[in-house]
Image (tube, rainbow, N blue to C red; front, side, top):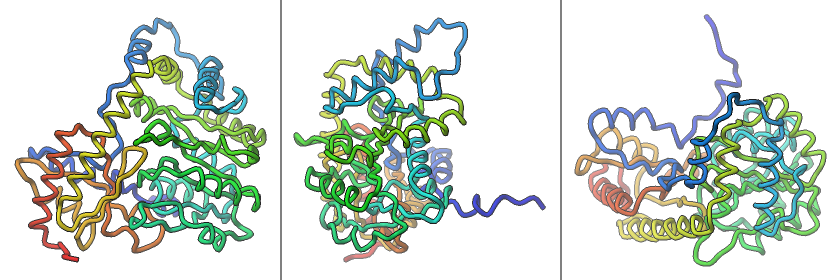
Length: 400
């Protein structure tokens, strides 16, 4: 009998998409699904990007440079300059989404068996990337009780060993929505410098900061140019997840040279995606302002409604478009499955992302779920009403 590799067997299942078959079955029964499990915005892509693709008259769609089209990288340099980050085109490799950038960063930073520290909970696919390369993710726990703030310095220090090669963060954070402060970022910079570690910063949600806050990019930190690697993407910035275009950024020439080798092996980033993303950068400031205002309203609506439900606690995130919520249930995976298999209210139900898959520590996050507030306010209100009614009848409810 044919067998697949042990490595393939060992890769984790995405908690974000794990329940998709149950959702598809529910939809086939005629149940409407409020999809709060995945960061797929319903915000329109900038019209500039749509029109640029529609206007293409090329008779051939060629390979681009493995690092990305030069005009597109030049536009990226200008984009970062507007965010007070000075770069050269040689500091940027265009990738197949932020996903490939993250994979490159892990492969470049660590040998098999070496370690990367990461605040927990963290973006679930980091687990899969690390497992693919036999890299060990070492969780540094944060908690919902203090809104998932960066763990204190001593929690990092007691986990740094001779095998530690990097610290990995996501800022603003997926899945928690936490926006790291200047003090938190400086603490990371100090540790990276003193212990000679890479600081890998996933910054794909840079634009989504609320209540007058600003994202502090790792690229703006002083004295650690050689340590910093940034993961970026246009997926959420311009609501164009399907173009699968991102980039890896570093002023460390060896890192970029290694990333280029990997980029050459997969030939080039997608030509049409670069045309669309380049045009999206021409969107006026009003586009960004309107998007942030809309997500602020959605966040406020969702957090307020969730916290009205008896037994539910949801902190108020300051970035991205996710939050984590604690539910009074025995197990959020069971609860989420039950929602799709056995429950409906007014012909609808809710799809969540159970949070245990965002933790590396076994047993953590079992009563939490990540929620993406990417739906309009009316749908968010309806989804919260579904959850309120579901918790009244869920057989595994725990009154705490």
